[in-house]
Length: 515
Image: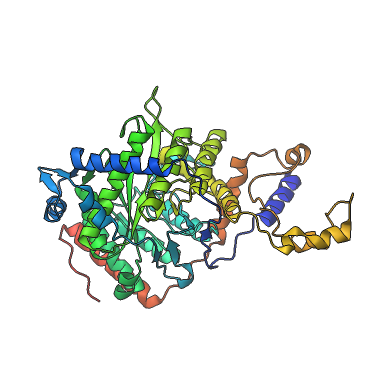
């Protein structure tokens, strides 16, 4: 039995070899026509409803007077914390956001194009817990953040390093952004997301990006992508708009995403939910353009629906998929890059429910033409858990999507005329020269999923996908090698982080960083 298990592990290791570390990322170009669920008239109807919401109902800006004054100065009506804005003013600013942009990475081979037909995949964001097969669910620590930063760096089908991979609960909340940024910068050379916890954490992010990439360089092309969430319904707070202002003035990319659980944070109908989502996203993008015209922005959507019986959020539902398709159409209507989708599930472990729900979101994500996919790997329990095995299993799905978006090539080689001439009617093509030429590339090669027959599967331990994924992430961490970083830059980054840490602990206001 022991020998049989060893043989099984060796076979899996050969099949699931880690890609060459340091290889350039290859962001996907989605060659498939996007699925559309709304007519042009339907898009215009939702647009008009959104404009009516903004004009008649308005958006609350909580505890952040500078934003309200900016809107007032540009012609919006402001009463207390409520801001109402007309369509002509809003759209004047929204149209100034670029349709495409490029985010810089410290490895120039990993710069990423946003918008158009580009598809960028990034890992989960924000879970306070982690889980694996050995130890179960537990509070995330900085060690887990480091682990997921390494795994993301090694994952060939994840193009972006993401942001708050997990919340490191063993680090003070006031300073943990420094540790997370250092991890992204030193453990990976992919593009990363900035901190939005406080305005000062956003300033720290910009300062560290300037040290890493150069102040002038990140004004030409952003070095940071920042996730700004609306506090739905129809509300932004000081934390989000304070961070947005820092990033917009520094001309860093801003991802404005309403966070909506339909039926609770929006009405229970998809028409109203899409109109509200659209209003919130455009309002945030409008603010960024008021502050700094031309600031790169992404139209974001995070949308699930509530279980009317329990109040719990649901993922992978038909309604979620329809809203995802509709959101993509709206983003294209405004000529903005679109963020949505991911491998979502409410399940606590990577079981059948997790698989069905994740697939129920990931297929529409690709078919809709999403440009930036956050939560593409590792998501469990509605985003509360980052799962080590789920991360690895999701990479399998990402790899399949990478193959799917290429569509069906139609070259002479693809029609395999020489194979027909060699083999002829009535014979199999297993040994044909054409088959040998395409042996490694003809079909997607599974790394976790098993295609073996029952007897072989049983002989090799009868392990399910959850069990098979467990040794994979462990092996990846064992094989990890950090990408090289200029020692002078590393020293400067650490000096900045330690200086800021000392200021935070002393309760001193942030001082400007000088080399």
